[in-house]
Image (cartoon, rainbow, N blue to C red; front, side):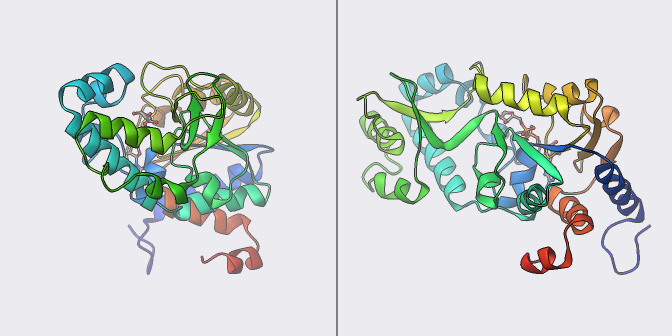
Length: 289
Ligand code: APR
């Protein structure tokens, strides 16, 4: 049954109201996000129809050894995968879900964001207390000294010369990756600072995320299938430490049975409605909703 004039069913609106009540009585609300939140910015999810792993085998494209095998035997696929990823990430902009989370943080409602996404969109939207447990594609890490540094988005396309773009020659691919990540001041090669399957999560970031999750009394898990550990254990860890879980996902996941409220809406719709409850009129006017 839908409320007249609204494309949102009455049950979902009720759950939104219940979530606002829960958030308003919590001293510390944290948001945990996955690829579903960025899917509305044009970045494909990993699993499910149209997901990245439907088109690229994660056993090859999701870990270093697999990428080395593809590089050795069919470098053209690496080039295609890399150019698709670079153009998708470069063109993606924050969507209303990212903006709502940032404004709820600025209004003091949300204490921080723990994200599995590497697209930098929470920071672009204005979130400041962000824990990127799978890293950030616009940051590079030196293979020699370990120093991390930002890769300015604006310079990326300039760096990748037209000769290398789309080339399937191994030396062009190596040159393109060198230009994308640049060289460290110590002379070491750098790689994108993202976590591939089988790699350790950045210790400091994970510790900070677990600390935040253990202290919150409400955690909103938005846009995640919660299938990839250890990140996927963070919402559970919060619940074990007494937090109430609100899940925002059009599909049921393994978190749904743990959630106090399950909002089966898209993240931007649900988070925009929630933020309307907490942002003052001027804050809403300053924003576009
Ligand atoms: N709003 C909310 N949820 C959505 C939306 C949307 N608009 N669109 C899709 N979803 C949900 C899907 O129902 C699915 O449950 O988002 C989830 C996306 O799941 P995955 O593709 O598995 O993404 P994620 O949970 O972030 O994956 C975790 O797996 O491959 C690794 O490192 C990668 O960080 C990633 C990790």
